[in-house]
Amino acid sequence: MPRTAMTLSALVTATGLLFALSACQPNDQSGAKDDGTISVTSTDDKCEVSATEASSGTLRFDVKNDGSKVTEFYLLGEDGLRIVGEVENIAPGLNRTLTVSAPEGKYFTACKPGMVGDGIRGDFTVTKGEAGDQADAQDSQLKDQATSQYASYVKDQAEQLLSGTKEFAQAYKNGDDDKARELYAPVRMHWERIEPVAESFGDLDPKLDLREADLEDGQKWTGWHRIEKDLWPPATGYTALAQKDRDALADQLVTDTQTLHDRTRDITFTADQLSNGAKELLDEVATGKVTGEEETWSHTDLWDFQANVDGARIAYEDLSPLLKKRDTELDSTLKTRFEDLQKLLDQHKEGDGFVTYDKLSKDDVKKLSDAVNALSEPLSTVTDKVVE
Image (tube, rainbow, N blue to C red; front, side, top):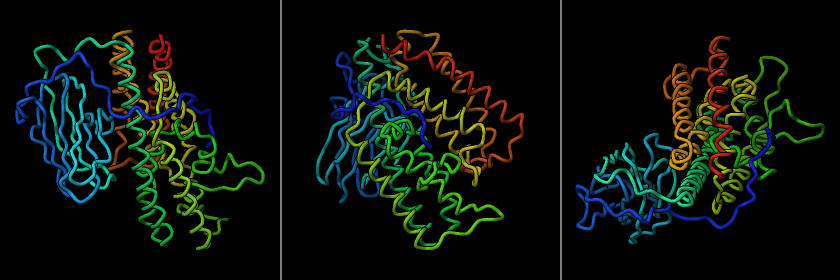
């Protein structure tokens, strides 16, 4: 549905790989080469990493593609969503190097043969080095690092949204409604995580995410929620769509998602766009998800809720190194309140997803709403800190 979009006035050529702090030197790493470089061999079905542990600071991964498909390599945060660094478009037989600055913590490595899907993942641990996590970086370096990481995250989510949408649309066209209903909520999470970016393009959000309640006179209804109603039809007064109408809706959904994907290929951001986008995602939760209005027919609002929180948290975590320098107390408060909100969401998990929203009590909804508000207030102050 159309909402106030994050202004992306600074869209220019992509910044490329994650910024590496020049003041750091490579660490000695178990399983690494003499110079500290960690070898990665990617094939069509394996991602072999020479070391699963390294000390904090600057890490270098030498990635070789021994497979038959173009591949990518990622270092991901503990949640498996935040992209610490990536190298893309590694053709068969070629080598690429990824250099990142990584503090102590748990991570994942991932090769992505064919550049689709979640990738072939493995655990990776960064221990605290003798010199600490990293050199004292300049604020401008930390901003570049944050915005580059977030641009990589948006591109990755757009890729997964496109591949998932194609699978969903095909199931819907084939009349496999059970499969389409199964895919609907998890695929939409990739959209919801980057919704302010999608909204910034203006024309795509109404085509892809318009709710029936927001239709204007004479406006054509397309996108996810039009198909949602056909998959979870009202008990009375609804006529199922004919096959030709199903085909047209599914094809349009894929076409519009492809456009979104293509527009994010060279996207870049500024620090204030990350912080404002995070706040917008929390606003999305407060005005649509927590009220149960977003998914009128399927009641899959908690999947959307989680995805909006994911997107806001990733933006915050990318900015966290800069925010710690400028306001340690605010950074600590945000970390705690994201954790508090996540604990509440976790109470409603069921299998790989969530219970439907109509099963929540009024007290459940109030607790979620209060946690969103408690997080939203300090999150709204981040922009003033990161643009100083």
